[in-house]
Amino acid sequence: MTTFKHLLVATDFSKASEAGIRTARDLAGQLGARVSVVHVCEEILLPMIFTTEEQRTEFHEESLKVSRERLDACIHEHFGDLPAEARLRYGSPAAEIVACAREVEADLVVLASHGRGSVGQLVFGSTAQRVIHSAPCPTVVVRPQEDTAS
Image (cartoon, rainbow, N blue to C red):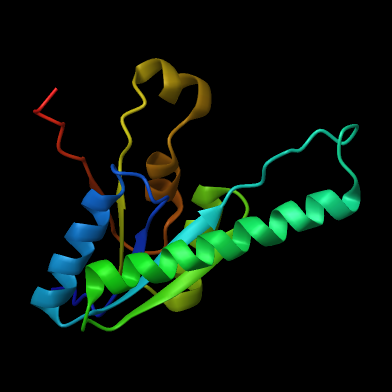
């Protein structure tokens, strides 16, 4: 039987990704595993004609700073006393999640599906699908609970 000692959970700080965070926290608590929480800052193509290289660099640095603060707050809020570390990456979410899983030697990747719908998946693909096909370890995709109040 596979033993999960190191979990990697991905977050984009959305409400939907909290389902993956909760699942990873619960699994880590039950298994005595440590957790790496990864957030990937996606490359945003700023119009070259309207921005200078300096402005693009400033935007990139500010984006990383804000993401680091949010990632640290997420770990503090959700993982408390559990052993958890922050991993901040920049690039394509699926590729960076897979690369991070290899880097930290994760035994299990946990992420939430976002349910963009069939048209969105057809046009854009799914980060979860890409991770499942490329991850070096088992992957759990958690479906967020639908908001029943609406």
